Image 1 (cartoon, one colour):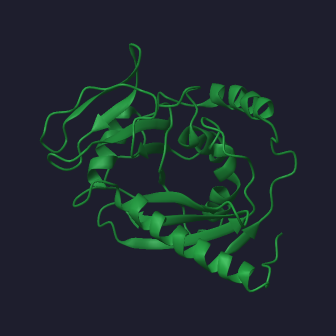
Image 2 (cartoon, one colour):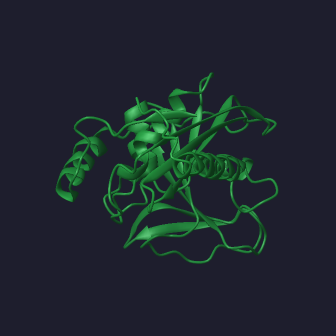
Length: 240
């Protein structure tokens, strides 16, 4: 498990964070198709928090895109880097998520975030933020539609409907299991929406959520449990 500190110069206020979003979102690339589904690596990232102890743990789990077998995994733990503010959650997650990605022994390929990309009030959620900072192709697959509207997709798996901000399509509601609530897919960086949906379907052969998200969620929860055990035992991890 890698331990990290809050980066020097990291935004400390909402005004500073929004200024960073305004600067970085102009660098999002939306005209690249992204890697074909079922090829290379695909990596899930997720975080878990203990606000009381001021601890956040991140996990990155690399899967073989063809078989969905685990190729590599890494975790990172640190202090929570930003207060909880809707629309600015990336500033709580980015430092530890990037540390977990950096600790991987192999290229991550496409990165799947448990959250939003373009489907964000400022059109720059975690998937876009992470993609711009790393240069990696990224998508967001969220459990709920945030503040956006959609028509319920048809019942069969693979059915989809636009996720809308007024008349602007910011993502899609995608049915990954027949008659089960859809997930909400949006582009992060260097991937088209059609391809993002195709990847999501390839990653959901059995469950509603992508295998990348399920495995990263489990790993980051284990990492948080271990980190808080160390804290409670008054054995502080070294922070570099």
